[in-house]
Image 1 (cartoon, rainbow, N blue to C red):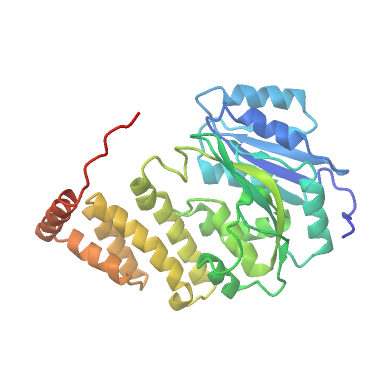
Image 2 (cartoon, rainbow, N blue to C red):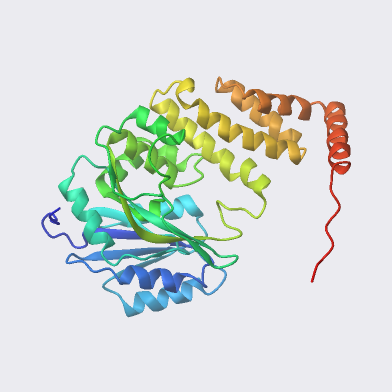
Length: 351
């Protein structure tokens, strides 16, 4: 495929980097972004969110060393993930947007050149997505080809509300990591202006979910088999809390309601996303059940009712038991007794 781009724009691409307390990683991130091999200009827009460690000093050093490439937005106070990201979008000068988490890094020097060429040659495509590797910070192991692709994936008909439902139900497309993607600034700004509540409302948990779903509703994605990013899995982060139960009741719950707003906006019937709803609520109700969080469950039950939603059978049963304290204690005692009588003794150590 011939790699062509539109008339020169300075910069043609804005790379968005939000960072907070990532002094151990941010230099590696910025070095990987500076290493792009392309014939057009691009900027690296860094939103430093008032870190309490040495992250800002590192960013200032890089901005001073590369004033023509790096533009540092040093927030005077901590904005939080979503406001910080949206602030960068609004200040971006590029015709295209790409991004990278402050603890991740790019591994393909030709990434921007190839992704921009695809967007230029496929005006119907709303997002070009790359493959990625997963770095387990705990033990340093690296898992390759996270999309499990052997060829590029491009299906022009996969777009619109049904494509969004298939994506949520995990029936179509590998899971998109936004830091592997490139998309058009004008389309994103239009989404921000038209649907501000999706990005700035009380349920706005993350930036990648509304952008991915809304862009997929408008046009098809082009998915590259080649790996362009190393995604660092940290023991604790916004989306990977050290407690799986806290994650389910917090970040995952807000992300569900964020997605539910999009489901309603697109006019999708509840039946169309039933697998997604079941998967999410089985996990969230289980987290409430294990932590005996009756207050959370009562609040969510009211919200579900207002939304016209019902829980899957097992989740509904757990919610009913949890909301009846005597019954919950009785079931918990039985479960504990059953599990304790069926535990095999630990094997002795062998040298």
